[in-house]
Length: 305
Image (cartoon, rainbow, N blue to C red; front, side, top):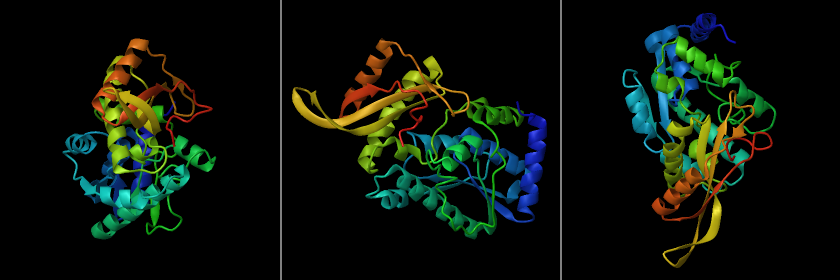
């Protein structure tokens, strides 16, 4: 287990030393990893930390408004970049290419904001599983293997790089972060883009956003999963109102884990699965069917891409 007080002291010193006398831009998504980084950065360099939340257009339902409220006391820059991300992802179908496109665009936006704020360094919440999966060729996390080779930043500061998710939650508690942030369910950096198989379009993102919201409403409070989600798999034949529908197939996934390196599917009552399927097909016009994924990790990953 991590020594919380010692880790916080060392991380604050690391950030302070790396930053020198300059400003640092911070990639703040609102998840526990980036929130811990923001708290450590604020302790280390105060107002020289420039936190930025990028609204990619690929976020969960109501996410930007929630982040705005959660971090109301922080001088948070919210950047609306939805059009840029959809333009960059047009025609991209390969999962690895998708992650790299998103990773590069994130960096270019942070570089742009860094020039505006005269910042030389980037602080981000990379954790150990991100590095393992990226370096091991499993998938490129947008903040590791998905980053471009050439960046303008003098340093990328990653104080959580050797921690697992459960250890990061301990640090969040030691920093006194709100319980909602400490125990927030993981959400992928590339957002809903990795919950869409194939090309990312606005239509697919709207469908998966609504389906994801229903899954979270049904499962989070009742079953406390490590992670739960909905994904758009493709098109399939169905019937709505006695009319044939060639509509979207939605996969629902819910797992238990401790460190994200392995995961087991939740065994859910059939009534719960039936209710989710009924809500998703009734509330989202273009959905023809819903399936439940019972594959552990390995062989599957938690996310679909």
